[in-house]
Length: 81
Image (cartoon, rainbow, N blue to C red; front, top):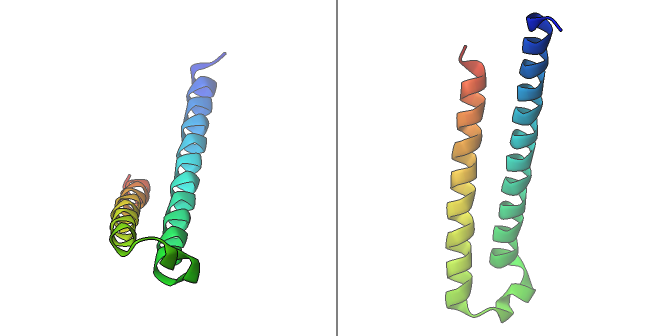
């Protein structure tokens, strides 16, 4: 096989892996936002002790911020040659 073909194949594989990681992170962000909304708004969440709900909310917000940062980083790297 020619080196050009192998290089193109590696580039394509790398891009597919990048796309999967991007999709996974976007999905994780949606899940974290959904969990935050549940803890904040769902009447069923009132059965969870207040302190525990605050801890859960802080954890979800922290994780969501980290995922957003990683997404922004990925997308900015994509724009930079």
